[in-house]
Amino acid sequence: MSERLIFHIDVNSAYLSWSAAEKLKQGSGTDLRDIPSIIGGDMASRHGVVLAKSIPAKPYGISTGEPVAHALQKCPGLVLEPPDHKLYASYSSRLMELLMDFCPRIEQVSIDECYMDFTEYRHRYASPVAAARQIKDTVKDMLGFTVNIGVSSNKLLAKMASDFQKPDKVHTLFQQEIATKMWPLPVRELFMVGRASAATLEKLEILTIGDLAHANPKILESHMKKHGRLIWEFANGIDDSPVQTEESERKGIGNRTTLKQNAETSEDAKRALHDLCAQVSARLRKHGQYAGMVSTEIRYASFTEVSHQMQLEASTADAETLFRHACLLFDELWNGEPIRLLGVRTSKLTDTPKPVQMNLFDLPQTQKELQADKAAESLRAKFGKDIIRKGVG
Image 1: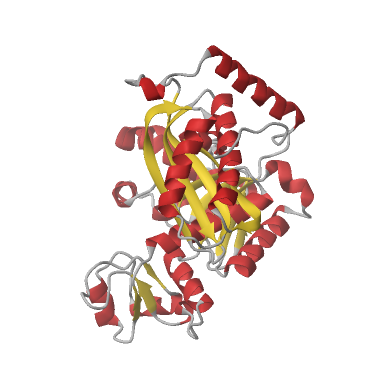
Image 2 (image 1 turned 60 degrees about the vertical axis):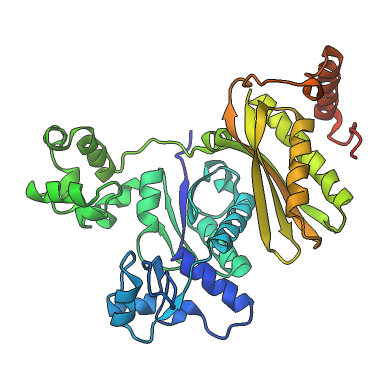
């Protein structure tokens, strides 16, 4: 069995990069990344903290998390851009969608970073670094911002590698490179070593990651319990944790589709929603899951994205129930503009449907209806999703 190949992909100063990319798209002649600038608070109130800073802002001693007012005092000409979390969610979604074209085995761990298990896809490229560089350059060309990519045989080392020199870089950190690339670093730079842990280690005269790697793990455990053993393993590059694609799916099952032609009518959009709900229902049934929440997502031709979710009265895997609620959400969201992409996602998943008080209008499916649904599902699986359809009102 070949060694695992794991990428850690991290957006460089995500909030600032995404705000800068959007302003350039809208015709701004100034790139926020090229001048002293920050994201955070607002100029009128001078309140809030610095959420992100540009590289030219660093020489002024500006740090992430400090009050905006302090940052403005350090650099009077500092450009302040307020955060736009809806925009950031949109850029994050576009990034993950683009990365799926390279490899679907992705675990997103925050709005601006993810792991990718590239093991089964390595043969398509000349080398792991060549693959990572192509991903990095495609993100820059298609989306207008840069990422760092760490390449290794496990998640821990891939993450450490992605934190090396920035921005717009690819770095490797394989087992044979640990001694030269990782061990000389201060111990506080190791993943999972916070301020308190670093202070404890320094009292033990453990100053570098190499010092930690060569320390006695039993002594570390006596001072730091299980965490001492964990960071000792990390210092030695030991990490067997998998890229959690299945776990991510169990937290929420959904599907989205970019339409071949922009949908300009409610009927066109709802036909696509019906197909999506059928696919999501099939995946829920496959995993033995029932959804308690459904959300509908719309991306307009202008690339503006909106979404909304609602709680279901009873958890379900039924396609028609999902479709009915997806349509209610769609009717609330749609502003009449042409639609480029539609998505349906379910969450609050359970292994068993929760009981619900029913009335005459919420009668359960009859045995014949259940058998008909099962037969239709079997036909779609064998001959394709278009072989049989229910009418869409």
